[in-house]
Length: 545
Image (tube, rainbow, N blue to C red; front, side, top):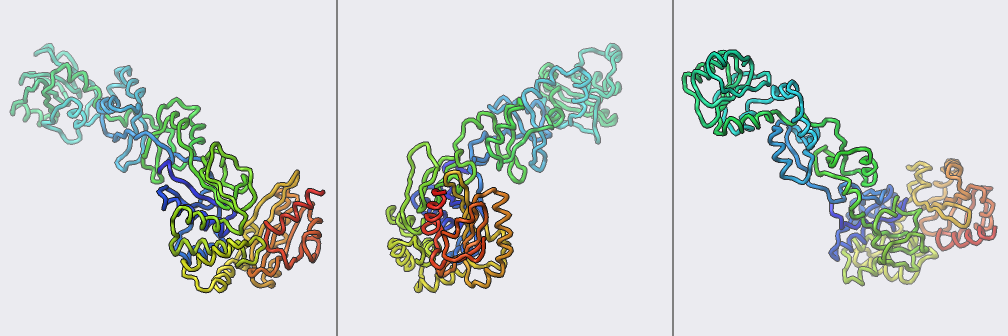
């Protein structure tokens, strides 16, 4: 995956503005020549699902951590060798690559082990008995390939004891030495070859381009003695034949491996206690896609993120300090996210982030198509509750009407009622899901509080779930040790909000809302905006405590 991709994400517990902003800004970036992917940090609410289906959009990528994964960074090209390749071949491959680790794979392309320079070098100091065992595992084909020879005859189920003899003796002197089940290397001589066959040799390796006579070959077949011929001389053949066994015999099987979806800094920690130079990186199908060393974990490009509809650390993606922020586009208060260098920062007092984005399309000379216009319009109608919210500005209204024409929406009110009505599926959701649809946490002085908000169409729907909502909110407030936790149920057409609240600061709610039902609930016919109407009142009251 490219290091230049910009991931565009809204806040935790995404609402329609957050999702539509991410999609439309990612689209604008692509239209202006940049790679961009729209993301989300949580599940979509019913209203947002309605909008995306209406305007032909897939769900944005779920992404909850800003750290780079292995698949995001430059990796070394893996040097791969099959399990049945010879050690001799492995040396040649090793010397032709900067990567001093060969990744050994099976016939299905899956990782079996690693063959390092240490593995290859260690064999050269093995005792004779260990080396013989290794050579005994070599196939005749691998022996012939290693010495640059050709198989003249291969018995069925061939095998040897791994011992090798270089034959220079003649006649009776030769018969004094044990040649049974051995590989014997010699250059010529029919009588010598027959004698070796009689002595029990399992393979004749005939060097220097010398052939084998038909009578000796017939005799070898009778005695089931394999025959290989090579143009190389005896000394060269003897030097390389001991590397005829496969890398599978000497590779390291206990391999530290990583998957390309692991985070780079997590991988760096795992590498600390190992001396291996290079590690295999696998994809979701366990296929080898790269090689990583400590160098890669210290020198890599961080992921790039553009943040929309928020600018506060507690609302943004996890580990945001470990990414590069390229832009912040928001209509809320200026938060506490900081950057290392100047970025595109656009913050305006208006009812919706998508109002700002519609302006950016104009600035860049890009006209949003029907679907993008529909997303921008829908977000504005959602965030302003069809222009009834106190956050609504003239710019929101003018922008929405302009976008409606491009989106093919003739009746904004009818569309808004249909769209907002999609968000009120209270019966089909658990209390926990309802509470976390759109919740934001704030800090004022030493006090921490959270405010959630969702819509409703009929008050009886809210009343039916009110006892369960109270219990869930009380539990959440207690578990998170919040000084105040508030949930607003706001009428889809802006006819006020029902409040539920818990926490040590619950008593101040009597000064926020118009009517209290009991110590933990109430109603206000005018408050429909968390940001513009409720937050200012709460902030003033909390600061005076």
